[in-house]
Image 1 (cartoon, helix red, strand yellow):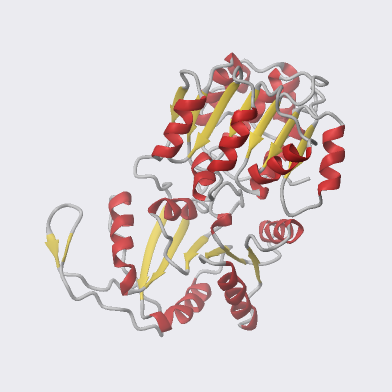
Image 2 (cartoon, one colour):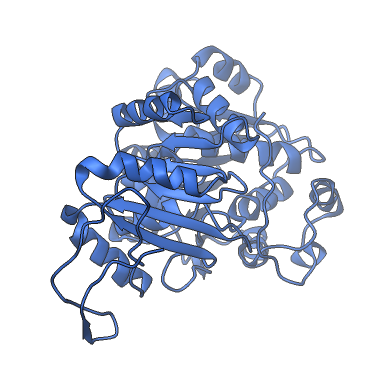
Length: 405
């Protein structure tokens, strides 16, 4: 079973006892050391217990998994068959959700099954034959079971769509829509997302009844406590810039790259340079991905090279430094990558290595953040000098110069 991540998260000064949870559930909360709820938990739990549909807008690391797991384990009764379905965009998020459910549901003897790709079907079929109360699944693997007749969803009374925008980004919306058509119309639906692009809005309108909207996203999108840094260099100097950054900041570091083959290449480069490094991408088996994340959490390797499979929904505590070896394809991806650091009240650094060709994306990121990314340099790497004046976000014009640190 995946361990419950422990990291600082902002809480508010009320008690879980005031949210309508029963003593058995409160006992499980105390057992893992939760004292006060986070803002999303305080707002979601009472609404979820009432049976209303809801949309929760919150960044990763805000405690939203417990926000929907606690009401589910409170409301469900063991032995009625599959009553709740939680759809997750990645295997790692699904496994973490199952870990929460097994802890919070212990007093009510809630049984779960986790259906994810990358592992054999047999153990999952056996888990389904034991009549679980809750199924946590990635869309593709759930459809495999539905088509084989090993998973039936015609009695689902509670549906959770977790990381809705991430499922959209990963191309899962057609699969999600196929699953939704098989579910009973009368059910409670809870959707959680960090953004609400138009397709997600339409999904909510078509599949939810007068949902309560709970929005605790910070203004500007990015978490507080992050120091943003931008390194504009020539393409041939990107590797040297990365190695210099890894020598400057010695804390736990997550390096993002776009493609799977490049993640393998970059991890190999860092290994040859003597760095303790692992990699994670979708071509690895589930066992390899779990092992890589667990080793990163436990400090067996300081550096994890990752594609955007690790940019959302994966709780790794105490990540000090995020390095974008390649600038993200969207501003939303930048925000989600940055969200792997500065969890709760912690501080963190997001360093982006870019070239002159990335300037349009840099401008978009700056407009979203409401601030200019500080131009920084590292010893031994010649920076690309921006010669043309640019308009500041405040409306004035100023000459660009490289900021040296």
